[in-house]
Image 1 (cartoon, rainbow, N blue to C red):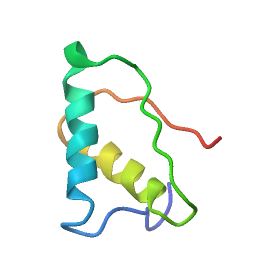
Image 2 (spheres, rainbow, N blue to C red; image 1 turned 30 degrees about the vertical axis):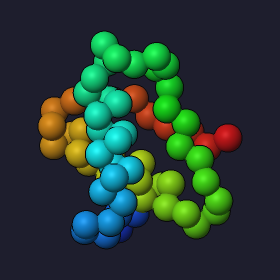
Image 3 (spheres, rainbow, N blue to C red; image 1 turned 180 degrees about the vertical axis):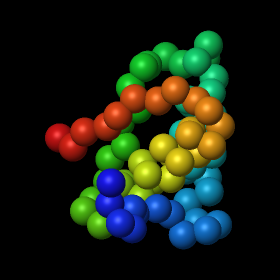
Length: 69
């Protein structure tokens, strides 16, 4: 575990976080089981992933892990 894990600053990336959480929670409407989060270096992908993991834990949702490609 990292001492200070990356996470989104409060009230930032809300639209992205909402879209991903809706995708996670609405499995019936899902046309794919993998969501690929991509962007330039430093764009905040790791912070978004950490924030999503924390939201899922808080909501007691089972989640998988992610990897870098």
